[in-house]
Length: 411
Image (tube, rainbow, N blue to C red; front, side, top):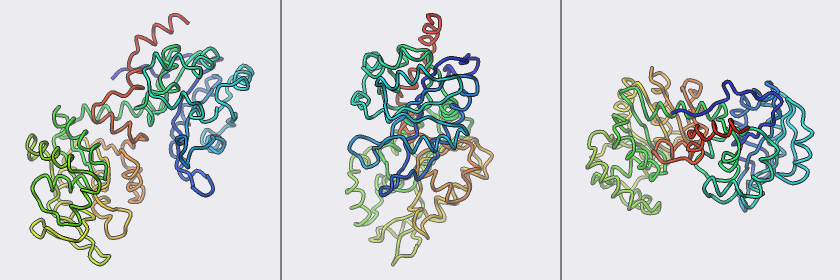
């Protein structure tokens, strides 16, 4: 995958508009930022641009209108100051007269953070790049800057004005975080073999999209399933899980997914690995059951030892391992073993390892092995979309290097 990066771009003295994704979990009572990972991840791009003498104007969002976490970016500016190691000016406006005057007065090396772009009604509409370029928001800011840098991989699956609109009018480049994400995830779709995908969690439809893409195109050699994804495949294989577990699948509305999983099993057979045993909750404690002991009225909460041994051996022999979604209810003591041990197998493997999805990242941190994973993605929906082979509007814009070259020639 080829796309324009910051390598070789002269930004000295230029005003550079940078879209980042610093959407963060907030304390519902105090509004304090609970996890500043995304803020720290985008800091290298901003720091590099400032040190190269650019006037850096930053756009970002927080929450959605109407949600409890929809707020201004004032506290984000303080966290960003800490992450970048230099002052970040916060401006309580997005594209009004105050913004225009402030940008014109900026000095090289300064960083200005505009307010939540979703305060603008136009930002909440997904439309093609050409239409977004005509919005009041884009038309107001574009004449004030010379370059546009997109470092918001976590929002790359959206087609909103701040994400694609400026690319129709300005030379566009990937920031360092975006560059790292695209290069790493490209290795997941053009992998060293054997390639293993480990898919769990509760977002069954997303996992089925990934499985269909990586197996139909011959990208993965095996897909290891757990969590609700694994239960869906067990049900699809004809296994009776028991009333309470089947009821959970029905509550999640997974009847269609079970039928889809059946079709995938019919098409790909042994390439899809389903749990060989499970761990259930018996009076608050873990209890291991073989598949022969199903159905059960006890809630399935993890994969069992036989499954874990098989999965660990496959991971040990792999050259590429991609994981998204925990294999059990790892947040509860006694039911974390499957998820933690698979993560530890990834950490000790010589393979190129990738983690996607917030829950799996949280599990890796809880297991103490996050630092041993080769790439941890900052994008949830964007990561899933990329691995599913779906077009991501921001990535499509970035990979259209010819368009950027034409704009550079006109500048």
